[in-house]
Image (tube, rainbow over all chains, first blue to last red; front, side):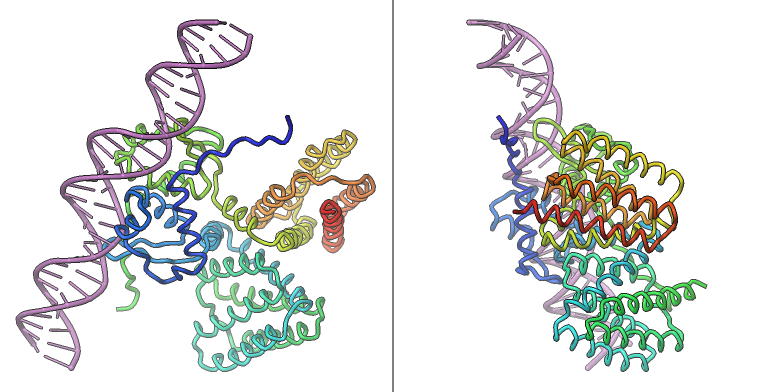
Length: 231
Length: 231
DNA sequence: AAACCTCCAAATGTAGGACATCTGGCTCCG
DNA sequence: CGGAGCCAGATGTCCTACATTTGGAGGTTT
């Protein structure tokens, strides 16, 4: 008898709760940053015992989706678990490996962006270039880094591969946590900005090879800045 | 007063338990496939209430590290959570995005392998080429796919980036679950084998550009086989 | 008016006990 | 030998009770 499948074990109540609570968060019904209803309320609404609910909540806390604060409440920290798990894994990895992997993704995504970008993508990239120019004169390193991060994520997103965009973003989060905002000398900053402009030009022109080459150059400048920050 | 840090919230007992149980698994003290001690034993050893223990175990179940079977016991299913979380995420993504991301990683890793491979890596790749030749005459599609998977993972590992190797492997798991073993026509199989040999030659010669080009060609043949399998 | 202190209700954290349900292995019977 | 039944062991769910933490409200002091 081919084609028969082993029967699935019945999902426990707490496993079902995990799934439905997760779906609730993913659907945006409990947005990131919001406080979910207290346990006693959920116990009533869901008609389960408090222990069963706590088991489910505990799972979500460790997946990084929720944060429970005794005496205060339970807050939504993320809407998907890949971020916290990948950040945790990246944090335990060698920094070079993280940097290299992210660089690979960015370089390739830049090429995809040259092929797949929309006019909205382009407008956003141009806006971020202008924004970067504005903040670069303020010497506010965190603001500069934030705009830079937005630029790179927008570029990668324009490549049209959602999964790649996610993984790239979370690796970025891990690196930011590890390194913080890097200090740039004026020379590197100017070159960085110049390469960014050329990169957007290449994306606009649909030049995949150029876009990849330029993205790699941008990464190289970043690597230099990170290397100098270590000494 | 600069340099003061906000005090860390005290980790709850169950969160501490999650961490120590996870460390126990990661250290190989409870190997994958083994059955962990029953709850009442762990309650005694760890001197916590059963509820607290269950909260911790529930978290690990949902991280994909443990599998609890009522009436039977709790089994170790994985030693790290990135795999299950990434597989879950990849399963929810568009197949093209998964395929494309894995292809990107493989292409770049092949280039890195040309630079970083050891003589052991090469010997293993050669052995797998021979193995692939042997099984290809058996028409056992699952064995063929398994050797092929081993070959690709070995190649990527030879690139020397652990994180990349992990992500690549888990994406492969997701694709295998989704597609199963692909049927190959004899022509594609022969070309696939030829490209594999050329790829190992390029890696041995330290030719990064060739290795990347050939890896991309291998991926293209796979894509073709997957495309034909859809019709 | 602003800063500080105290109190308390609300919220999570932990423990213990009881019972329900499931499963694998053992024993018995045809 | 194969199948059925039984049962001890194991997880799943529920209930009750108490401990600990926290934010906000209200009151007092400067």
